[in-house]
Image 1 (cartoon, rainbow, N blue to C red):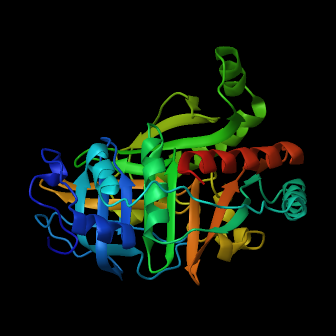
Image 2: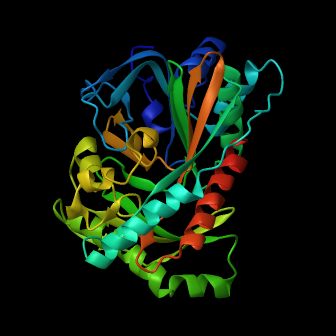
Length: 381
């Protein structure tokens, strides 16, 4: 295969490409994956390069990965691989299983984040709210561990993630050169089919567990949760209105295996390229702060910038098809990040929560723990 391209027909879904043993081995050593809206996966493997922008033409069928850090500081945020393809879940599962030597189970011992550190940030933010500077912020805390590394550890996480990648959870990741990230996110920053509208969502407000009908109704009508969710809806409406007409759907509950969130679908007639949309929408108040006019510099005053890395960042693909570009951009939450050092893998598992003036410290701390536990279960950590 040519660098960063797929075989004819692949982008329109008539063909399920198979990863052979050589491709699967390269995929586990240096690869990436992004779940698509149709249930398949865009994947890349082998040597590649970071580029300022992918080099494409209308007939090139290029698939390029967009994977910046949260603060989008890289001059070259696009990764173009030696080989790319679109595969079904079954095809991916067969490729992962084919080279497995034995059933692997990760052995990790987690050090949980410090409550005192989170409490200090929480109280500082409450002071900002009382002063009238801000309405909402999303601090992130991290559990850390050391354990097994190498391609077998990557395979183990991918296999467990694939087994749990049922809608609305989408599997994504990038790894190579001793670093990586893999996650199962419920949140899409945007996606667009050729010639169609840009579709996004407001996803903010969290309850733990599976909700009954009565609990769902209480959740949707909770004043604190609706206010927090409303800031995300209003922000996305404002940002997208610069491109065209915006349509906001009804707010409901998105139920996940162990968590539930308020969810509002939004679409817009926005004829904009991938990176323009990503920079316009990221970070929404669901992962950043409100009002957006505060700017990322304010966020850096209380955020652990180095540790955050790609947590909450845009993460997606631009795919060339005969009908035009297909865009898929996820929000990189519910993930584990790592670095391989001296034969051991050092893991970092982040979780964030939306803090507003009405937030209760102990409740937010419990929500953070529940989110980390959901990641550990879904990825086999």
